[in-house]
Amino acid sequence: MVWFWRRFWKYHKINRSVYLTILKSIIFSKVIHFFIFVEIIYTNENDVTVTWTQSTDPSGVAGYWLERKINAIAGNSSDNLNNDIKVNDFIRLGFTYDSPTWLRLREETTQYLYTLEDATSLEAEVNPAVINVFPEYNLRTPAKITGSAAFIIGEVGLISIDYSRKDYSGTKFKSNSTVDFSQQNSIMSNNLKAANTLRIGGELRHKKFSYRGGYKMEQSPYKDTAVYGDLKGFSLGLGYDFIGFRLDVAYENSKRKMDRQFFNAGNLDTARIDRTNSNVSLTLSMNL
Image (cartoon, rainbow, N blue to C red; front, side, top):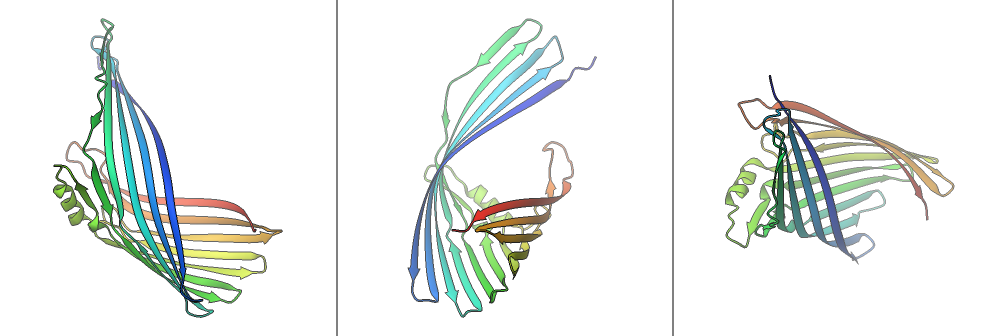
């Protein structure tokens, strides 16, 4: 007789966030505008994972219930500097600097275990009711720079180009306690790299209709692109103005290749995944 186990999972997540955004606009002249954003976020995230494993063996343990709760509290801040230059009625230039994001993280966990033996109906419960508080640590994500240009074609339409660069190898963990993150920082520095993103888009207007199209290419942040490949995609859109309202429909398609290790045990090859995402959106807006 062959006995087997059945396993069921239940996952529940609650996320509470508070955002504070400060915007400062500086106008030097009719052609140069500066915008400064300061964003502060407080997040309290609770993850609850419940595992119920059941056996068909009547002589052994019928099943066990394992419940694990994780409470993560994070506070982060970041700055954004945006510069917009109107060269003439035909050309607009822009530059954006997104500062590194500093996150302060604190994690807490609790666990609960319950087992049931079928033959004797013997129950066992382990509930220490102890909250494990881990040392607080900091995470700094890298900065990003973006340059943009827009070419205005009168009342007919426009063409825009955006280029951005972000060096993911600069991601760093840091702790004020005795916790040493040198190994984790070394792994990120050796496996991550700078990634470039290019976006090209255009819009053509004819009477009450607007026709849009765009192309996007995002480089992988990994040095080994087989792990997580570059993303390439395109978008199409159509807009229509009527009686103080605007109706827009858009389609977006993107593709990326990646390797995925489904099992940690054994000498198994990774699976090559070709991921394709398609999104369709419909928006109705009011002109005020």
